Length: 323
Image (cartoon, rainbow, N blue to C red; front, side, top):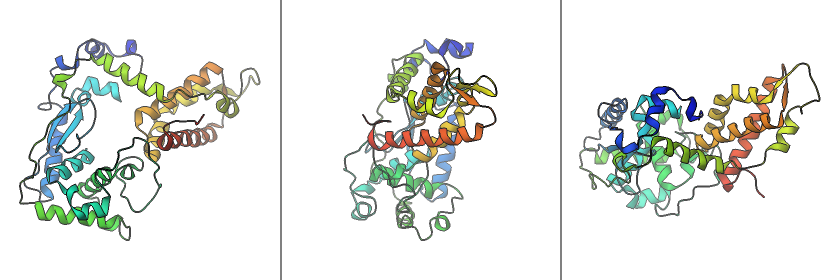
């Protein structure tokens, strides 16, 4: 996230406004097209009566038990979306709309719906008992997420799920979704609408306050000492003068791919991974560390392995480094 004073003038004038006063709506926004695509994909699957209500809120989500889909407010405005540089939620809504989670077969395939929901969990990477739709191993987080991920794979056009998941135990879950969708395609949802949690009309924070709160949360998550590791990885100040470049520049140049790949393969939330990479760059700058010119690929391999290890610690234990 760039410093707010460096944001474009058109964005800066939005920062001081309360979110509820921005007049954001799904209708007429860039998001409206994607909601229509979601509904079209649902209809193509034969579900004639399932159209989950979509609304703008503070983050992606589907309130537990409510067949509605929350979409981050900033995606409704191109200027706000630039600051922040889903079928999964539709799966939750489908589950709640037809109360599938109450069935014995659902419980046998996915597990107990009322199982305690833990933010940090211990996935089994590459397990074939679960599909993989979004980054990481999110289907393993909770039975409700397992179903939502399975639904998303099933719903995705041209996913070829029968071929891709052939011989996987997860195929039984996909067949269940396909079978249930055929059964309820002519039926009205048991729960036709639901309560929203928080809407843009309720959000009193200004845009800047919202993002500063996110930055504090993510910064607190990566409040970890990296000095010793990075000093071992790079060249300390004063040891060499030729054939070197600032290490922080190398990290900054590759911040986006590092963030993308670590997020994808670990499943840690992107803002947290992004804050981790930014912390690495900042620490390199503070320590005045240098990288040997011409060895960039080797450094990037080591940085990726290092960041992935820290991210998996965070995913499974709630901390990047255990103390």
